[in-house]
Length: 428
Ligand SMILES: *Cc1c(COP(=O)(O)O)cnc(C)c1O
Image 1 (cartoon, rainbow, N blue to C red):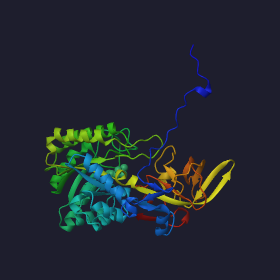
Image 2: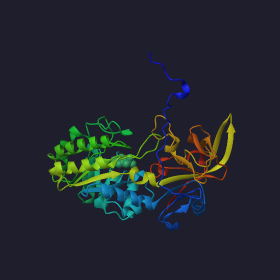
Image 3: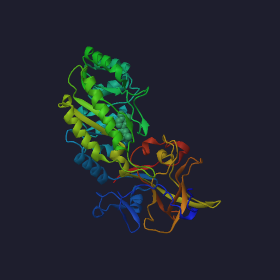
Image 4: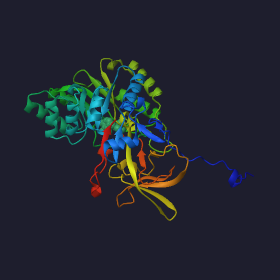
């Protein structure tokens, strides 16, 4: 008969932990950011940066880390693949300006993002505009700018033709495909299901014919199958399906397929137990696909990435205002919270709330730790930045950072909610 070993000798399953956040150095117990901003490449201390910004809370993004991430991708991706920045991840004008000199193009999701992209000096030929609900007004702006419109519907196609006619300009269009396959492991499912995004693949041949009739400038295809993917096998599967489907649809194209945007969806680790995506097999598979699909030999293959480019380069910084104990639990009450960083509070599409990686940026070397919950200033229990985390003991005046905050932070949060002071942003 099998017996269980006694409780105290049974191997305990180790609790899942956050992957190491080693992208920012710490010196003398203080976190540093901004390798290009002095300090002999070690960056600026977080207290000095807070003084420079003149307030907490703020978001800080590190130029050096943006450079490093792009360089690393360029090194690994096949040379034939162009790298686009999906601006909605972080549309701060300084960040977009920085990327204008680093990547090959921008992908937009609104007309306001288009203005930022054009102001940053990106050539309109390298800009594509996706997203539903593009009305005649936005489409007219896009056609006048000369950017490529990624068509999300058949009505949008008629409207963009109308905009072109009114302006006397031939619109540049690509067809966004809603594929019949689904990417099972993506954080957010897009594809394989009824969708407000893209045109169902079975309807695409008819749409291509209509593009020919309307004599629009057909650029190619766009297929985006999901976001926040940490599994290389799932990304590979998506790429395989994407190439196969687009090669099939290319036979119906009204002309050459100039660009094939294969999406992106590369994830970054946010929660305990998550590991960084292994790009090596993904890139090897892309090499193989480029060899196999000679139909795309003269096509520019584009991958569009948002959070993968900026997410890990950003910190959200707030300040401990109060430290209180209640019924045996310790709360660090900060001036930052859900209103600035909805995702870290667990209210941006998460089913089960999990903690983002959080640190006491002014006590990085301290071994004197305690279990605390980090909460914000809003009068709602949803305003939680860290639940029961083991952190160095902190006092009012200490600075708390939330890592992995460079994407879907500032602009993805309800900053007016409860009318607390605005949050700042800096690119360091
Ligand atoms: C949001 C979005 C992206 C960027 O997603 P990330 O997860 O930030 O990489 C790329 N393409 C399209 C079409 C999107 O809607």
